[in-house]
Image (tube, rainbow, N blue to C red; front, side):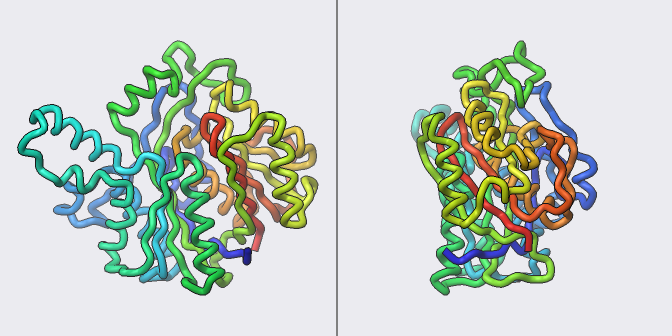
Length: 353
């Protein structure tokens, strides 16, 4: 498939990623069970009357998409594609609570209408008055990667030239309670978490929204070339290295050609073994991790893609992300590997432009 270019990148996360010097101010968090996103002043971007009716994920996505489009200098994208794992779960919870509280009678449809996963892409389109292709992918931790694949196909088929691609997920009280009960989230007694050498189950949960403008042509502001993506729902531990090697070989790369590998170590001992296994392939590469900065969530790979874009553009690797001591004079190729609890493994290959 023909390569496309990431021409802008914007992110709202648990770090202050909307500020200009965020690379110097990254702060790891490993001592709380859940970390909240640093939210901007929404009144600067969204009319106050609309803010009241918007869930957190819609608000974060509206602002992140606004920044991405503004940076790319595009008023109307040719398509809007959003990936999300949990969608508008705040409104889903409100609707279900109303069902219970009102004994399934006299329900207002508002929360139900706003609870669907494609609300985010729809609200962005409404704000832009954009009537183009509008799609939402809900594929747990590979939702963003499927969105990127769709964008590549749209551009390759000549259906679009500039596409807004994003990922978003929010925390909600009841879902977080359930995640604590089934040990998806770490117990208080297991904190602080050790993301690289964990011996306990569970993760620290985060949230955020990341948006990118993917284009057919390279621009002066381009961050990276999106070369290829590979996704597999299930992999055995002994298949990981072959999975990576075949992906690189398909793109005429060897493991020695990869300057930076960004791995999704989440502090869950049972699933982080996949990353440890993958690390053994890359003896000459700079190895990085990021979920101690973003937390784990369905679309955490949006944060790693955003960081990879800045590493390629600014040729600067934040020390707080480094696993090993390897430093590269020039970063040309970045490989991102992510999964969620051992399922939905994705590889993304980015190149310097």
